[in-house]
Length: 366
Image (cartoon, rainbow, N blue to C red; front, side, top):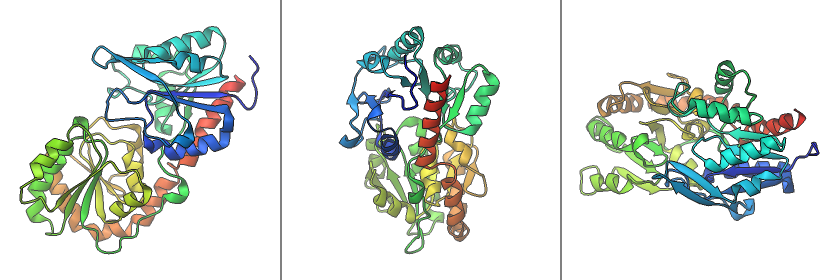
């Protein structure tokens, strides 16, 4: 195969949420017609669906979930990824078509990259690690989300080439501190309403804290998921019905900026995900449960400076934390510029695209 400096690239994913919009914009601008993007309609967790604009021309794959959605075969994925110069595949041993693609491309001496978390959610000693190590052997390298993960993976498995594309939502120019028009008076949760994220714990904490918070303090849930109906039912008819708002899924940038502008802090009662870079990018600190299996983006949190980390992970402890943060709101508001600048310097969509393209170039040179 000819190794060109402008390789054709296939990016194959289980599903692509709209949080990837900006990254895909930049990647498509830089790679042009050399990039082909493929995805199924939804992830293993069906609350994550492919929701990107037609401009990205995401080519559909058919997802066939097996064994109660524990395994996946993507019809068309192998064919899509076989003949391009570089295939970027999801780093997930539960996707059978990824295994097939890796083996065939290895036989054909065509480089592949895996993209995703360095480890499973259970960490480097999980039962799936031998399978993940084998996947890394078949690929030409792994693109992970943070420098810390890259160092940890290199130390554990020196034979694996590691690259970093920091997981990001927005361009650097859009990661600017929100300027509240009046005194921020809300706590905001942004993410899927699913059990591992524990939005029910946040709601209970707000109930506990409500009488000690200013009367105008509100709790905003921004997102959808299987717990949405349950959470709404708990609020309807209660004394807090006017203080808890459900905004559903929101992807519009200006709407999100407005919601964050009115927030004292965002809250992650379960594991931290990509929303931490959104919150900190807007200059809004995040309240985080310490003892949760956080995603790599947790590395941006600096307890006491841009985040408040509480333990144990109970509603009562979270309630005390909400009260303390509300009482210290002026300190957090004054720090918005610094919090935003720190996040912007490390987690912009441009930096993500830079890392991604650097990995493509390096694997082509090997």
